[in-house]
Structure formats: C-alpha cells, structure tokens
Amino acid sequence: MTATKAATGYGSAFAIGDGNTPETFTPIAELTSIKGLKVKRDQMESTTLMAAGQFKQYAGGLRDFDAVGGVLNYFPGGADEAALKTAYAVQRARNYRIILPNGGAWTFPGIMTEFTPGDLDPNKKMEANFTIKPASALAAAIAVPMLAYSNPLNLAFGMAALIL
Image 1 (spheres, rainbow, N blue to C red):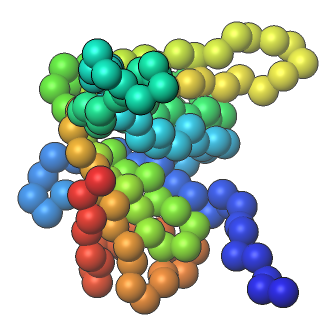
Image 2 (cartoon, rainbow, N blue to C red):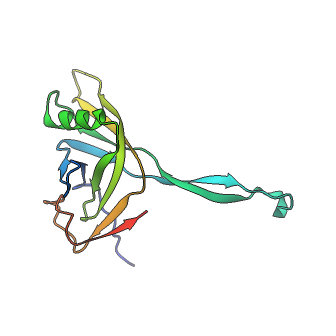
Image 3 (tube, one colour):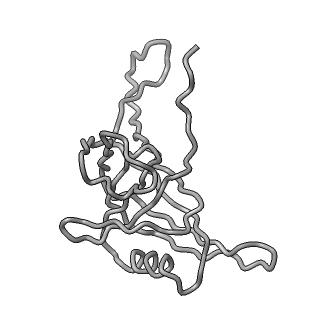
C-alpha cells in the first residue's frame, strides 16, 4: 500500500504584489483561511438533429476562475487592513499570489471586489473577509527544489511556470 501524500494547508500564505519590476509580494499576516482557485469551463450546447440516443451534446467553451478569497484576524487600523483597502481602491488588476506549503505558488492578476470587516461580537474574535476575481490566466509556479515553510515568499528563484 502506498503512503498518502495528503497534507494540510498549514504554512500557506496569501500575498499582494506591489506592481514594481521586479515585483515584491507582501503577505497578509493574520490570515486564517484561503478560498482557493476553482477553474471552470463554459459549455455550449451543440446538439444536432441526429444526436445519438436523443441526448444533448456539448462542446467546451472559454475557461474562467471563480473568485478567490480569504479570512483574516481583523485589527482596525492595522497593516493588513491598510494593504487590503489599498488593493480594493485600485480599479485595475494587480498581481496576487497564493503560496502553498510545499513551496509552489499560484500567481494571478485580479481585481479586489470585496473587503468586509466582520460582525462585532463580544464573545468572538474580529475577522475580515476579502474577495478577488482573477482577471486572466494564472501562472502556476512549481518550486524546484522544495523550499522551507519558514520563507515562502522567496519563490521567484528556480521556478518553472505553467499557464492554466
């Protein structure tokens, strides 16, 4: 029996690019979860008048990504809030990066569509949510060799990029 390679998301990070060349990515420090990338494809009905078994037929259309998001511990006036508000204020796409615990990363241009400080409850921690709509294809970077979890933002070196 082969041992599983399953792992948790512990050690993942989400970072915002500064738009400079070379680009520097600043992580959101108090991130508690990341809603990852979901790739989908439109479908076009292409049924003919002689379709086998009278079943509809489909052809693949354009690909798209669902929104990416995250939840963080919210500190009003903190650096994370400032970075997210700045990203939200920009009306054009900027680069974002999801860093995986194995050293890989997904870098994508996106538009921040939502920044929501959460509900205030006397018995719960304050949280904020953000949502980003990927604006085009992403570059999936696979780090070679695997990088240490303690320094996940040095992913610009020794990578091959794939366009999904």
